[in-house]
Image (cartoon, rainbow, N blue to C red; front, side):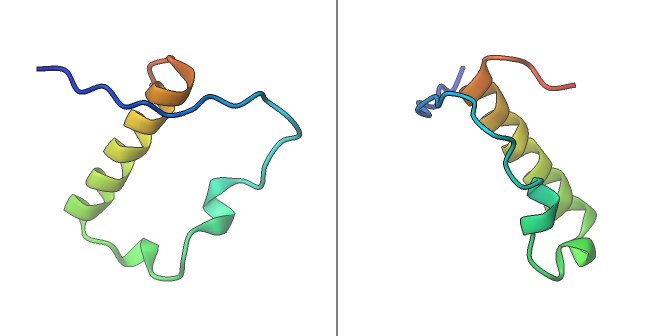
Length: 55
């Protein structure tokens, strides 16, 4: 089963602030399972917006 997300694409403009700079305090203390979940979600969003498979 494939899951497709519709995320509106936007035109690239000036480089945004690095995502790491926007993460809230405490993210370094997440459990390994929670970190893996967050990274998997980000990978899905990257594919949905760009069509490019992340590394």
